[in-house]
Length: 464
Image (cartoon, rainbow, N blue to C red):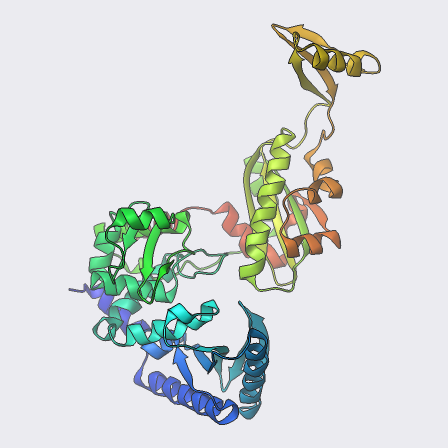
């Protein structure tokens, strides 16, 4: 049974009859256009097709079902040609985007529309690319989700309010399809949150009972939440959910069940930080912040963001290997520029460092070590301490800035493909207040205000 908070939220997120009618009419017009232009069947997919979209989020996904006899190249060519023709028919605007193959994102009569070519197959066993699976999701849920649509809306708004909605790589949260399956599995919003309050890493949900037990599933999948796709037993629908977002959801569910409040359904308003405030915060923290800035690669975030994180970890390892402890590191993909920031506990070190040598009785290595530092070393050593040689040497990078400025050194690490190309064209190093820019003011504000979303909700409740 829903509480008054949830009933009030539903009044705000449930699409009005007029919106439902407009969406259905637009979807049917697009389907008819595809049939007329391409001569292939088409269907509306996603939350709009299933009636589970939150008011105002009326994005329309149209899948164009081409014969499975086409090659991938033919599918792309015919699919894009048909999509462009549909957009032209409605005098809309469009942009090519890329998943496994190109599709068209368009604005048509005020609707955000994705026109996606895929293969017309009879089962997921015939899949040639991941998008071929999507029509099966819609067919599966249309037969089962009917009486649970309001519960899906509540869960979607709850995950949006808690900052854990979105399966893109920047968020690493819950997809709409995952929300629908969770509601289906537990039979309602309240039932799900009560169960989620006790979730542990490796939670398994297998609606169709493809596997004999959870132990078998955990041998195949290692993610924190494992939700077997009821249309494809080889896929975990929650694969994009990061351990952090999973844990945050458990915390949100636990706190909401303990003390329900409307704030759990309301996303945190983004805040900005001025350059002066940024400088003041850094002075208070007593740390040094360094950042690499470079042109944003011309690829979608789901391609670029994982590469940014891979690059960040590579550089973090290089900094810590050179004795610069990294307190925190983050990445941000902006419209024009990308930023990889490192907050350092120590950014400047003495010119000398200690070099460990071999044990005395490893004769060849010991002789080479002594010979190397016998002459020309301006510092102490070599000497023996217990069983091993040591010497003081000139530190290669006394300043963390110097390491980041060594492009050859930085690019020798494990750098994402498209990020590497952009960095090779040139990157700048920014220090402390130089990092601030209007493009990143919300990102930097969020960095300093970091806390779990449930903690933020508790603070809001305490202030009431």
